[in-house]
Length: 295
Image (cartoon, rainbow, N blue to C red; front, side, top):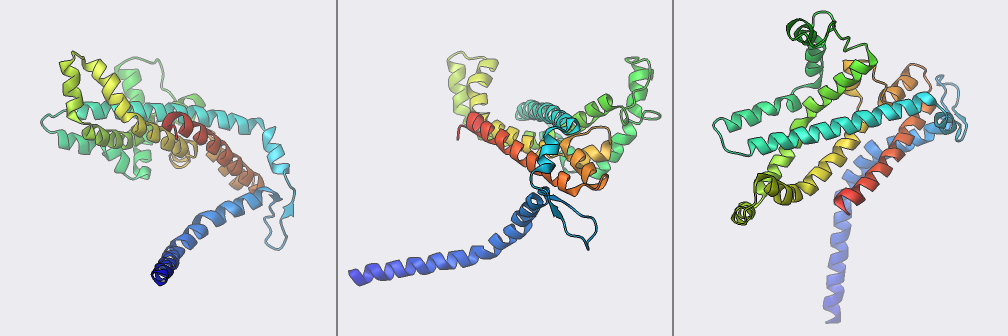
């Protein structure tokens, strides 16, 4: 009996060693792709980075962080980023929820409509940006032509690309339009998994459409919507590509860090910006996970 237990323990140890060997390549790859860049970025944030490869970087401790804490442009970019993130996440989630509720009902051509709705999400971002720049061009764009000439809502054309306020609304509308299909897919998948007997029982108790939505649909979607909001908040807080491609007039934190690194060549301060950004988003995520998902 003792020998049998010892053999089982030896077999389990061998299986554990084999498991570690199998996951070692993946772990090394993750460490190479993620952990090393993050560690190197933190290291840069404590240095005055030299652009001359023959001169060493100078260790300055927390000076980059102290500079950022009193930098009004940095905090302005944080505020712009928060506004952009909150509005786009709320807009994409509400649009995705409404579209999913509409397309969850059977009608002729439903599959075709669902496929068309996914086009903004699956199309290449660079092509979408060029189309929107053409549409919102202040001189010959069809949006200004429609709003001014056809509908008469404005007396003159709006400079959507170079005016900071108009550019902010432009990137918000683009992000909601571009990414709401992702929310639509996730919410629709959960809607189709809700047991129909719950709605049948509610109808027998005299519940109306709003009551079924409030007491059955929303509670069933709580986890999915919470996860969507948290994920989209993280992604949009770091958003750079579509904002920078559309217009240079929306100074979100990612754009501010990029210009600090490649316009003023202050790589140490840019690294400090990304490090602070990481800490800020992690705090927000922890609070959101505990309150929304209740983990």
